[in-house]
Image (tube, rainbow, N blue to C red; front, side):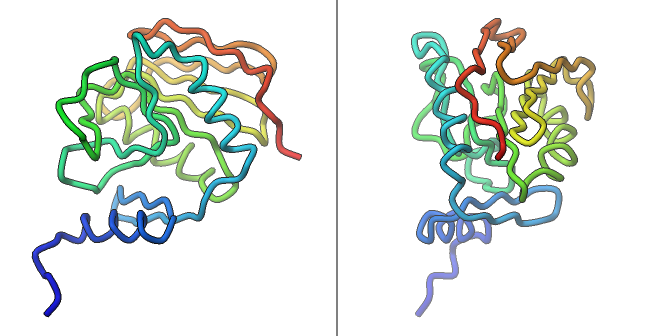
Length: 180
């Protein structure tokens, strides 16, 4: 007899893990995608490499939200203060998240620029970063107010960008590959 005690949220998380897909459930829709491209992952790795682990932990492909509820985004990178986890959390509590980073792919462009800025601002995530290979830009949103960010800065690939308060950290983009 099947185990009916699991929530739909738990079943989605289990299916994604088992089948190698990234699954996000937010704003009333389920978004599934296959593994990211090599250049996408190179940008994620290069960004994480530059975040000092003595102050910040950069977690790839972690859900953000309320523990036990898998309805929420799963950004490419979640940045939290080091040693701030209460346990082996999934998703990571939105209250401890300092920044989230999304690397745009052709399948996620509308969500990364559309729903996600409003959603992250409403979750009170201090910094939201969009790294866009097609446009060769990095957009940094900060100072959330209700459901929008009040500040935005744009940097071109090849120039560094700064993660503002609470991080105050500069990231170099020289190794970011542009879309071909």
